[in-house]
Length: 254
Image (cartoon, rainbow, N blue to C red; front, side, top):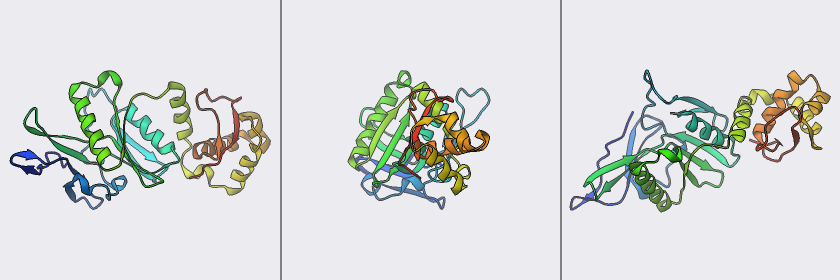
C-alpha cells in the first residue's frame, strides 16, 4: 500500500511546512502535520511502498529477519541489508522498520509538492528516533541531496537523528554477516551451555581452543557466535574472525 502523492497543507497556494504519511499496522493510511509525528511509533509501522522486483534488476530486494523485533524488515539492495543488520546488532536499538513513512513538502523552485520515503526508522532505548537513508556516496545526485537535506531538517524539527550512510568497512561487514547467521534465539536456548560458554571466556582466550574446553566445537561454536551477536561476548570486529580470534566477556544482552 502506498501513501505517495499526499495532499499538502497549503496557505495561499504554498505549503505550510512538512506533512508525513504512513501505513498503520491495521493497514489504514494516516496523514498528519509533521509536528504530530513525534508521538507515533514508526518502528511498528508497515512499509509505505512495495519493494519492487523485476527481471534484469540491478539491486537485490528481500527481507531481513531482525532479532531485535522478531519481525522481517524489507531491503532493496545489499547495502540496505547490511545497514538493517547493523541496526539489528546495535544494543541501543529496540525497534526497527523499513520505508516507515512518506515525508512531503512544497518545492518553491519547481512550484510543486515533493516527497521522500527514508529507508529505515529505528527506536533507541532512550526513546529517541533514528531515520536512515542508504546511498553510495558516488550516487547522490542533486535531487537526492535535496531530499536528504529536507529530511534532515524535518528530523531535526521533531528531535530525531538523521543519517545518510554508505558502505560498511568490508572486514566489519563480513564479520557481522557471519555472526548474523547465529542471531536467532534458538542458538542460545540451552541456559546450561550458555552459562558454560560465558564462564569459559571470562578470561580472554582464543576462539577455537577455548570453545573446545567446553565441549564439541560443532555444538559449542554456534553458541559462542550467538553470544557474540548478543554482546554477551565480544571480539574486535575490525579484524577478520578466525580460530585464533581472542574472545572476551561482554556486558550487553538482548
